[in-house]
Image (cartoon, rainbow, N blue to C red; front, side, top):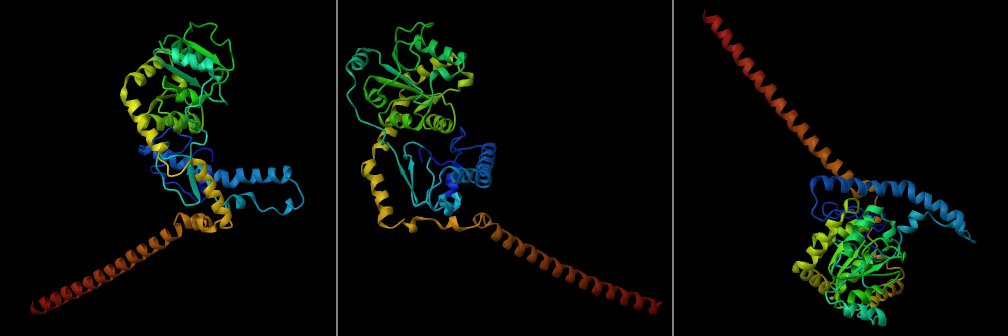
Length: 374
């Protein structure tokens, strides 16, 4: 898993998340959700699980059988059954980046394989970093997204704001002429930067990103505060986490303005709390018993040594959905409660009828005795 669990993979590994405090990775919720957020969280989680199990997996199974044909492929089991039989899931996650949630032993979190130390920068870039007396701001939307993908008003807000800063700005963009309509003497545009090395440089003061998990890891590792402008999927989750733990701020691209960008930059750079918080997170990130790659290799070899490590597989994967949700047990206890209520009600009714008869008989005797006397 390149990021934290989406609902369907969580379901297929038997890791049913505690939805009261484990936010859906596609949503910008924290682990302290309001009632309405929790209601939406539960609905979206089970919606994806149900649709995934009843439609998506069957569609992928059909694709598998159409395109992956080889001798013996006709005997392949259903794709959902194979996914439910995975021995080990390696999740690209670290306790410093993400809300704490319980996971079964068949899921091993790891993170940081993409992070490098203070690698040597190219000579020209090293000169730019060193000569930036006020510091450097690094801007990148990663390898999939580009600044040019944003609406024109969004691009204008960001580029106008960056051009007015006193800091040197390293801007990753495929379009070398993107700044032709802006005052941008402080901006260096390139199609690629050695990101980890840039963030590791002591002169790098701020990272403006779309919130991809690998960029977030590198920023936390090198203790560089963050401004996140999320685009999609887990980036909203990462942006909310960044803000909730105090290592940066998030901006909504749909409402972004030049003033909001400038305000966010000034707030993060001039409030020492952001630097302190991300240094704390960096210390947590680095506090690992063994190097990340050794950790991953150990668990892969562990599964091989133990022939699939079936003992790591949780029994929940063999339960029917109504068993996992305890609906049969709830129905059983509900029946007992109703049976007890029925019995108590029947006994009380019997007692009431008996008392009523006794009282009626006594009253009748009194009436008879009274009439005799008269």
